[in-house]
Length: 95
Image 1 (cartoon, rainbow, N blue to C red):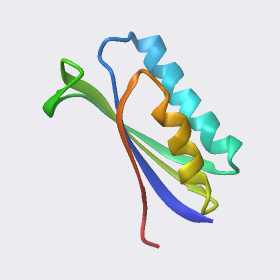
Image 2 (image 1 turned 45 degrees about the horizontal axis):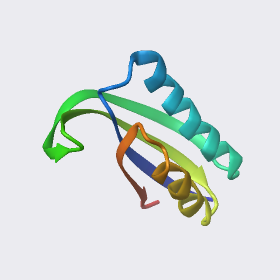
Image 3 (image 1 turned 135 degrees about the vertical axis):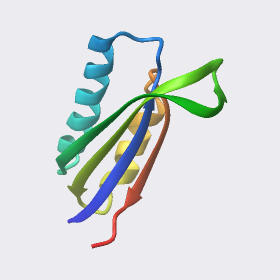
């Protein structure tokens, strides 16, 4: 099992309940692919460096998880089709 971090930027056009549902869905993807979510760091609403889809701000989250080597690629496929996720990045953390 390797340790990874997902950086998520979630749309400001959705309400708090929908944002919570997005985070729960990402956690369920981690668990579906035999991973374990360790921590969720909510950075809150921040201004982005440049506009994406006519939005200047987004909600930033960092999710740390452990999982098998193939988990990040599978999770990435699911994140690509989520409308409320503006940007994401999955990186492996050094041990």
